[in-house]
Length: 299
Image (cartoon, rainbow, N blue to C red; front, side, top):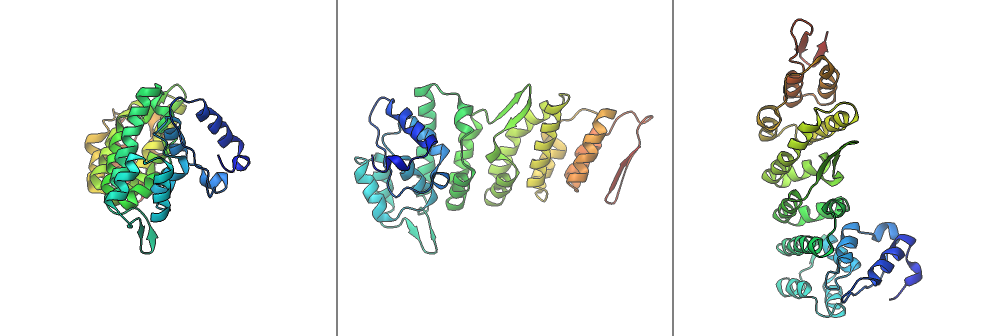
């Protein structure tokens, strides 16, 4: 291995862990960037699952579109003829650099996602790892790169993720993978509306269940619901999902009123108002709610 002393402590620990793995493994530490820029936790975990020698640096370079054709050829040779790289080079000879923006040629991104998805599922079976431990290390930048290059590939990756426990409800509250929160959902809605709606639909059930919990779990669930509403305020199908079919909220109680008012205050619009109205539909004798213009008041 070259440049061993340039590794930070975290990377050194990873290398030591990998050294204890069985089977062939190739590590290339060439043209190393600073640790904070070069780390890719998704690729770290894929590498730790012994993925046929494809290195951390190589996979990240391909996914980020930073590898020139001659570099890919060198990686291919150094990896001992990695089958995925062979396919990639055969399909896109000399086409890994786009004018104005380095990136994988159309179709290559989809093959990369297929490769990563199969590696994830196969690795989980081999290593008996907790799926959430792997999903928790996905990198939002990498997901965005796939979406930029090939929206259908991004959707395929999200389809894989929805098969894993991306949402967990624990005693401390609701845990949703950060890469699946509002900003990325909004991006996915622009690139692939059906994919975004399917992703949100998968999140709504656990969120709605957590809303019935007291204290911090309810607060965190409300915050996550707010984030999803903010991600797609102008999408009619998404609005319908929230306000009509997606969240079956029971009639509220007086304790629900502050949360409902906070929701409308944070996100003006028909979606927030509809959900708030359901929560505030408590005993008419003790609660009066007025929603006029931009004002929402509870007495």
